[in-house]
Amino acid sequence: MPKGATPLPVCVALSNQSTRKAKEKAYEVNELSLDYHLSHAAFACNILLEDARATLCQEITKEIDAEIKKVRSKGDPEKKIPELFRRKSEKCETISKLRIYVSYLDTPELTAYTLLDKQAKQLVIWLPRKLLQKCRVGDSYKEEVVELRKLTAHELGHAILHTEKLINIEGLSGSRAFNKGSLEEHEAKVFAKNLLELRHKRNIKIRDEGTIDRYF
Ligand SMILES: [Zn+2]
Image 1 (cartoon, rainbow, N blue to C red):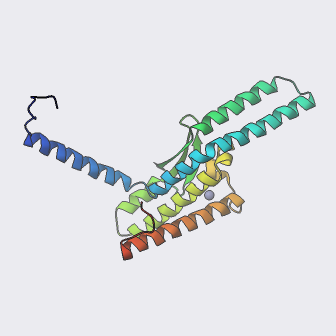
Image 2: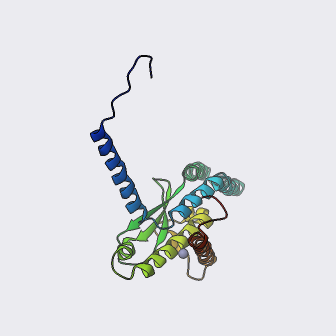
Image 3: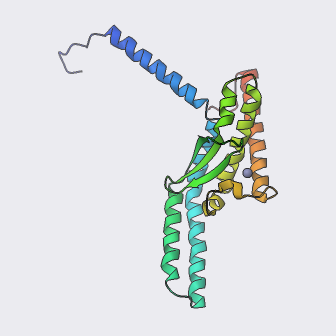
């Protein structure tokens, strides 16, 4: 504060108003956060994705370079090559900014899937809004929450384990393109089971001891 300046008088009304505003905002954020199951795990997956992005781009570059080599060795028309270069730069551009985003979809089915939104450069995990609505009303609360957590964990598994495959899937099927008995489905199931078990153990520890091994 400059020399000689007097401090501003505390305006109680204004202070009350700003306290109320901050409280309301905190309530609003908490209410909204209840809609995002396993949000901490989604943040963690985004950190892992950040680390993996450079490697992913290198792999795509390698694959497309091999295709270019093949086209040249076969003596195929050179016009194919600019198209391969375009694909390479488009994919690397998408990957370099790729983020996981969780949202809800109005759909009659109670299933979830993960789809690449090329324009937004996001891997969107679409969860059924119908299930969310069931979580927040009625007495079947627990069952629906457990189901939504399972779906979220399963799709996070696809997003983090099958990133490259999801980017390469054409059309709008996203993670629904993986067949029931496929390796991808098996991996996503194992990931979800283990993630949920670890989270459960952590919650029990906090509840019983009020402590956890690591700060969070
Ligand atoms: Zn799946």
